[in-house]
Image (cartoon, rainbow, N blue to C red; front, side, top):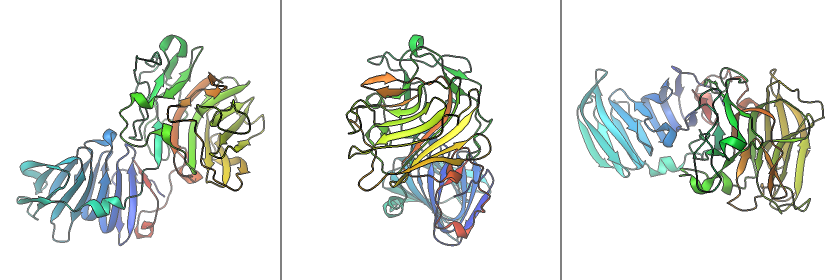
Length: 421
């Protein structure tokens, strides 16, 4: 796992390496390959082969080769350039545009390709041949996307109220899901929920992605709480309300303004999911009188929790926290500015420890909890950079961990995802 900055070249002698751009575009390179991260939505393939999955937020993702320019319009595809300089694209799903390049300049007409089609350009960049694609085998081998939702709170204006909804018919998205899965957050309404974009942030950029961080969300009303609403979304990927992961990671940055009582950072609505108590929801990631806690029910009804001491948190200070389940142990990490440290853990025991859900209609929430069938435990303070993953991330992979100093080389051929700018 490593962070690759803009302009960084990667050379791979053999094997596979996965690269994930911040906007959700996912690439798998097959060696031998020479690859460069050019811009936040652009890469260059000098020689070799790559497979790409491009979600809606990354539409327009561009792959440059010495003899062709390929613009992805939301697809799954394979691009290959051989040692003779022949560029070829095979489209498995969606659409792309393909145009020849000669001497660094676009030449000829732009060709539009759909699923099942392919195009090949000779080393001069001037002769394009169309055909049928054969991308399925390579694209099908790509690892599944593991970021289920990522809420950054960046698309707003400081000190303005987030758009609300009446919870029934009026549907105005408040916070975009940057994972590409379409798990938008909604606010109940402006008058009661009172979520406000604020310029107070834990850091000017997110260390493990390099992305600018300019806004957070403050719970400012009497009834704050952001929630998913799958029936109102045009989901393009994993619907967070349906998942029951055995491995998972929840990350959030937060600054409490008070520490008293129960306050929900991230939660999952529902009841009657555990033998511990029927009024409990499936998941709580919360503060309790100055402590940090994660609690969840597994699909067998067992209740699990890890909690720190009561004096762990400080009001008026930003904290970065991560709750991780690998299926056998529940761990809680905290970073107050000097790196993540393990602050609590508990063994999950035998049996199936997948996270429970009441049903697919129950939402996930940010800034509140859920108890006895009702919204509860509103968070008093600021929340930023909330990410939910369907794998057990390592601390070096958390959002506010410093970028890895590992070099990009053939030694990474069996490596995991590489966060890109």
